[in-house]
Length: 249
Ligand SMILES: [Zn+2]
Image 1 (cartoon, helix red, strand yellow):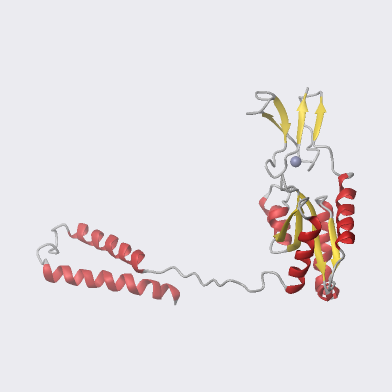
Image 2 (cartoon, helix red, strand yellow; image 1 turned 30 degrees about the horizontal axis):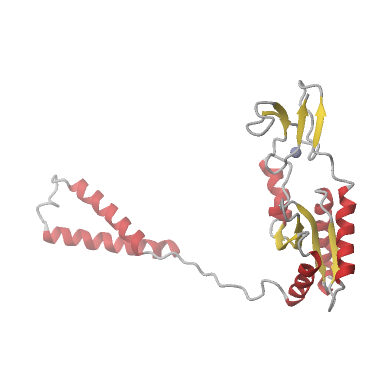
């Protein structure tokens, strides 16, 4: 039906123009007299007209509930609490935050589809580098539902696998900023001890080592800029999503 609707308009123009030409210039449309050229010209013209007159639809409206009242209230407290030591990003899609280490399409999309369209309520990042520091989930009564529990468990495990801490904070009418700050800092500090050292030095440059961050087999690269320009190093094949490097002495 949609295809028919799309076709009717250019077809009507096509026929209309054809009749117009036959009436006005009968000599041109006589067989053997550049007939193919005329048909071709008409087709191009009708397609152009169709493109010019067709309107693309954008059925989008701005949502009034970008942040729910409980989220907004928490956000305002959070803003006051972290002031300038962290950047607050609300509603971050897990797809923008994490990636899948597998390279074959089937496994890649299998695991991406588990996290795509799932959001973490707030993400705290380093204000200078935008490096993610901590995820925050605001837990209201809906988190007691069985479907939410399954979703929450998945999100917890994803954060844990990617070594990013996640704080679950129960929804309240008001929050103590000092308590909140110490809780957030505690979560971030506890994770600092688990972060693997990114710059490792090895002596053997013949066998590719595994990335200290993600475990992928590394590839030999040459520094293009900076003080080490021209020097070789082991880089992660998933760069820039993973910036794990190993220096070669
Ligand atoms: Zn890596």
